[in-house]
Image (cartoon, rainbow, N blue to C red; front, side):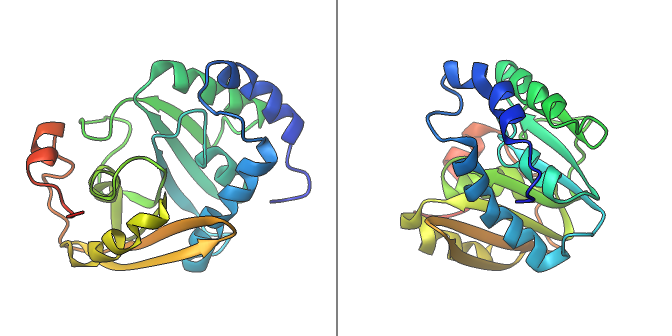
Length: 212
């Protein structure tokens, strides 16, 4: 991350989130280190200076979307989370990093119709340990435009399941890689994504996109 990253300001802004158990014990430095894997994946496709429209699903207090917005100065971000309280923590962090002109926080679920977050429009979608491979893929990929990128941090035990996502219509390719001690799935999204996705929870449970 850039040398002038305002670590202390973000630590102060996230203090209530730590008390609430939203972040856990990881330091800002450790979160920054984990975010480097997302940044590497995005830059490998678009570079650091591209104008990008981005979405972070399940962002909580802004991880990793807020940090990526700092590193990608021409990107705009929507931080989406289903918890109003976590959105408030995210909003405080946006102000602490002075990124309100490029980052908005939206309270909602990605499997609902969201006025502020149109599907199939995002250059980049990110998710940090959002859920199972099937859940993460379905809740995130439909927001990518054709030619867009989905990057998810994943559990290493799910590597083969993620690699099988290349068989899902609309997923052009999948690369699973290690960055430090973390594992990431990087997916290029093409044409052919089912317009009914993401489905509601019961439908996803009956017929998951990926098999374990």
